[in-house]
Length: 105
Image (tube, rainbow, N blue to C red):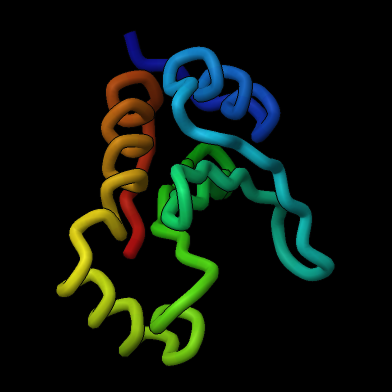
C-alpha cells in the first residue's frame, strides 16, 4: 500500500527501522531546505522532500565529485559502481512504500 511521505523526521524513523545498516543524519543548511543524509561509508544518498514529492540523490563529500562538480560526478559514476549503490538501495525501498519518489542524479 502506497502512502504519502510524512516529514523528514518520519522518513528518517522509517528508514532507520527498515534499512538499519545505513547511518542517518538530518541536515539543515543555512540556505535551502532541510534534508536527510543516509550514508554507508563514504558514499550515500541525500533525501529531499519537496511538497508531497521525495527526491533521492547521490552523495559523496570527497573526491572528484566535490572538486570538479558535474564532470567529477560523471567520472566517479563511470569508474566506481558503489557511488550510486546506496542511492539505489534507498530509492528502491522508498519507491515501494511512498507515492512520488524520484531518483536524482
